[in-house]
Length: 289
Image (cartoon, rainbow, N blue to C red):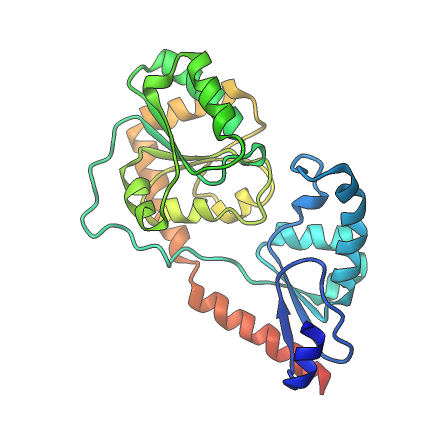
């Protein structure tokens, strides 16, 4: 239907954001790719049949596009690995976080509160974070952990919280977007232990609210953090526990991370992203004529 509608409306270009990409004949297609986790062995959660089908569907879709918009260089590299012939069609248009306004009257920081924001799934590293927190809490009993989100691992996490004996120190609850600025602002640090991210929006959101970030040194997270977060190699709970403990205990380090984070987040704006996307759309439409 999309191809028919595009022809009837005499579209100059079509922007599409999912797989598979439609066949549009002579109309240029700009395909936005946020990530290619369907092809990543560490993050695959789909059925076995879909894992076999996905590479071919994704490759054909990428090759069908006139231009490919990616949200990070990391994702751009993944696109080239999946479809090498598309290397000259890729444009990086990063996400931003200025949709999120820090609280005008920031709440007091809750000493020792570690915050994790996002979908509760294995890809997000929530299992590693909980195990790390249990070790941290044994050494620093005043620490707290808040999972702000929901997802398929919610029940698993709740059971593991009880098994680890940290139920009084851990909360797991859904979050409304309007509450995010307050949650970020009152946390002592934000942990982002994701195994795979095409960008890592929660990193920028936390930084915009002046909260130190501890993130995995994996996928697009180092690129998004840009040297303004404390990065952890691997997904060993003890390594994560030690790093969290260090940032929570070192006030000067936390202040330095917060300052660098604010500056980093300020360099990403949706206005700049929109302008870059318009340029890509214009170049695709011009190539048609």
